[in-house]
Image 1 (cartoon, one colour):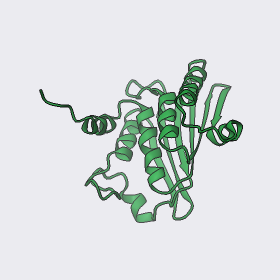
Image 2 (cartoon, one colour):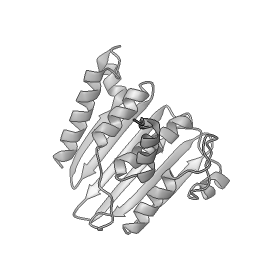
Image 3 (tube, one colour):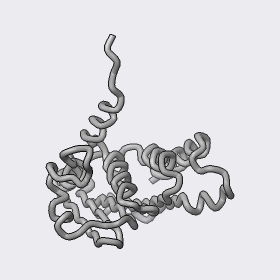
Image 4 (cartoon, helix red, strand yellow):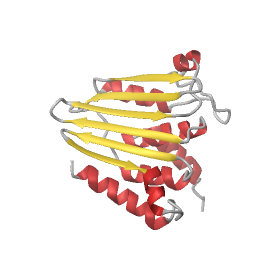
Length: 194
């Protein structure tokens, strides 16, 4: 009986990017690779204005102008382990296919902000996915990094900040399984209530 290579399945799952939470995971991991210790995830979802915006901002090392110009090319990557980088090109494609676009603001030594905008009602807009699980994975895998999530939808808002939670936990590790489950459940419950 052949054994399934789970690492390959995980990579394939990321390449498919079936929902926006996987894009968030991919970009946040890139931010961590770029030395970020603080990552802000902002989601604005408005039925009234028919808009959906996803912004990921980090305080990593940033990119020079040439890298920013090349970053949308799927055959360009700054990583040495592979010869292509599909994360940002696929997010840009998703945004454009649903009547929106993608912008990148990056300065060396200052960090990077990636903003994807979508027409909310467009049939090709990808679903949001499991944001709670994405945050759980990020915090569980990188407890030393501070993550914030700001979500707003037509007058309602929700904020999660792992730095504030760490302070409240007063030395208890934020990546304990029960705490991670509480984070995931709290985020998903808040976003379902939109």
